[in-house]
Length: 230
Image (cartoon, rainbow, N blue to C red; front, side, top):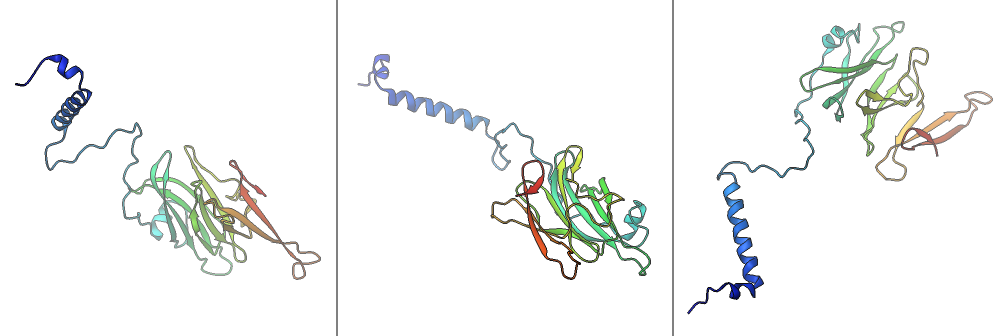
């Protein structure tokens, strides 16, 4: 004969645990989506970023003309996808056009656009024969690295996405600085393999002249707010 008195259950914790597990299973089954429908992921309290298109927006010579970024035929020389804190999934495009003669300068620059071709930001470059994303083009800090060349040595543009647009740490040249800027005659390298890019600068002292000068190397390391000599 089975004894259903409460005292018999009170001395069996394992039976209480089994009953609780059964109730939980029934509740979860009742709340689950019907078969064949996707289950909702658990909430993390963080909004997911908008999905990025697998195809980068295409900008041709006429597009750069209409935006007022080129007066000659410019072509896209590089595309770098990244997530921006204000704009969401974004594409950084580099573009350049060769001058039709030695007396006409090259035109170049950068353009940040969304999947729908919305222009978020643009910046003209200089008389640069080359401009394209560096290799690597980003690092653990989230900074973006773009190489340019005015005809001799490489320069480096460094962009840190911010809600106001970008911080460039003085790497984007103004009119007075063109065709070079702060990081010139440099190579982006990860010297200690920590996933953070350092900037190696090799400068000719040009003493007594550039042909007889020596090259001095300085490594600029990210400090958390700027790139400074180590």
